[in-house]
Length: 289
Image 1 (cartoon, helix red, strand yellow):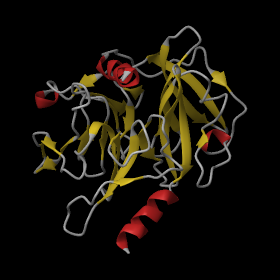
Image 2 (tube, rainbow, N blue to C red; image 1 turned 120 degrees about the vertical axis):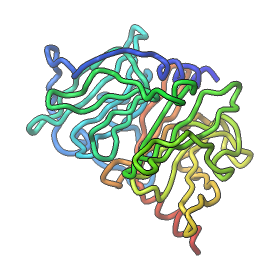
Image 3 (tube, rainbow, N blue to C red; image 1 turned 120 degrees about the horizontal axis):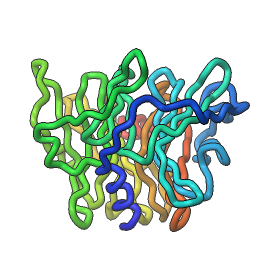
């Protein structure tokens, strides 16, 4: 339970920051896509060991649509949490600290908005804007993670009490943002439901939670959009990804090739893992048989 509240605190901090300052840049020798890392196959691997993943707390792992920026949250040896970005500059990756930790970052499919729970920043000619708020009915919700589709549909979670939080969505209808609604029972069944990721084309949704068919702590699930527009039954991503540990906050890279997620490795150790997104194709094919 402690991990969930640690993450929810991060989502409730309101820390205003403009674009990262490069006064203390760390220019690394990394080159090539994915921070120069060799891609995994169907067995999850820690992402960028010693660079992103360490024996401390790293959380998130979200790329911008052009794959030239990677945002995540990271703990240092003093227990301080930072909001970090790697940017692809020329032929190298540049690491910068944006601020202390802040809500879980997600870059919209058009690359113009950085969502941070119920707050956001807009991309400008000079970088990211100051922190703004969604306002309205979003203010009363304790949102940890909010993601958006290419149609502008939001899917997001809430902290809740003792695991009773639910996943909601909000569409753009006739140019206006609709009132948040509960997602269907295919998604909202179980406890500790959190951290949804909606595919850009809304063909599937990922989230995590505890269910009777799980492997231990929270597992990652997927639901595929059906021909009638409804969501299909929740499918556990299986034992290669889900273990007895806490797995959560899955997303797929904007190029559609890799699934990123987090796994708790110890009391103070959460790592970023990645694996081929073929796992989703295989689950979809099995469901369609």
